[in-house]
Length: 293
Figure 1 (cartoon, rainbow, N blue to C red):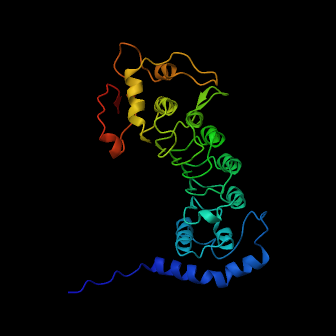
Figure 2 (cartoon, helix red, strand yellow):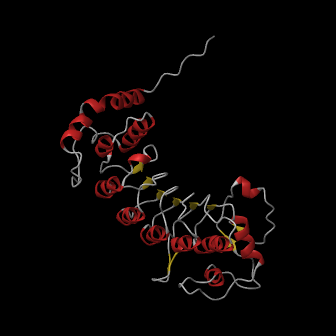
Figure 3 (tube, rainbow, N blue to C red):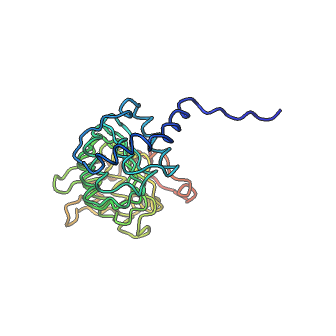
């Protein structure tokens, strides 16, 4: 028997119809009368009654079909959103749009800005400082730098997942600022479990390896660190005598961090909370006494 075609869900059909027809009515009116009025805290309209998950799905549908305009995005930045991904429309993600997000979407717990390279580092700092409830943040392929990661470390106390992959301005020093505030002399991001840092340069540099080792010691709940040099960082913690003094910028040494984690010479090996490694990393031989829970 011929295979029956899958019937689209009613909710999906409704969203597709809405995406197809919203331009001629609501977007047209907003474009003609309100588009450049950025001080509006709320925009009352037909989309306020949609659940936040449906609003995000509508953004995705419009973005993938290339029907998402600046006016349509304005209408969909709503205060009841808990999750927002601008990945379907990186070209629309301007500094002005980011300021609207900070103004209207105060309750976000998840924000994905993957590929939004038009957002300046200063605006990214403002976003992070205005959205302290974030538990997931995607900054891959953005202008994130040391100032941005310092703001993330200082402000996002609930952050559990962070992606800074292929950010050309994220240096080893920036990664240190994510995990430690040298001015306050305090560890940061206490809840961070997943850190994706793929494609950062220089991948094999000794400063990067040391910075990754710093993260492994400074982030007490880090279960997954995605970077090609993670094996080198683990070997550094296992094989090399750790430096006992901090550096000129106020960061503690690896030895000081290890002592904070309960590592004592002659005692059982240091235990890390790592629970998984990327497949490419697993293929490398890791014969280490450092264990993970």
